[in-house]
Length: 224
Image 1 (tube, rainbow, N blue to C red):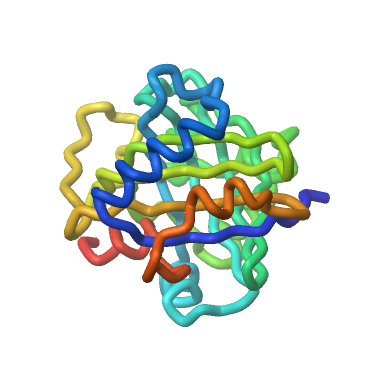
Image 2 (image 1 turned 30 degrees about the vertical axis):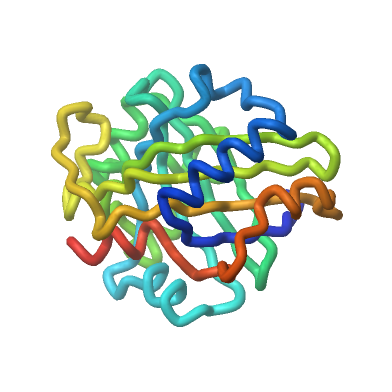
């Protein structure tokens, strides 16, 4: 069973981001998945016809889940299907791998093959799509600058340049048009297991900032 991890999320300014990059760079290790210190993420989020995932997020439902497909740096050779589950301030994630053809089949509504997939998560998504009408809703693009700190299994990320594909689901198309999702913001996320070391707690402290319920998916759904 996937382990639940603690999660903090803060909406911060551009100047905050620059300050945190300097602080975190001094105490954390670079992420091996981020050559050059950052990478691009493209996600395709799913929702029901009644927008259950969106409504539960906006209403602050304590126990909720969301499905998405994502890949990195516009390289579709490795595509992940992910299910994020939240319970209070804790979160966990299940993953499976998809080929480009499988991801496109899901987008196109060609689902029969999913029932026999070797990935349990693919079969879970299939059941949700068949019984609840879960379907692709919108593309979410952004840039991520990650930092890791092994004690406590801490991962700190700074996400910015958030863009929406409006109502497009053509997320394997590198030329798919996207637009900025509202005013420029940076989202600071801190995730850890049993404890958050003081050195990280001090590094990410920003006076006057509170944990927020900012959702990149919700911000992008404003546009479609």
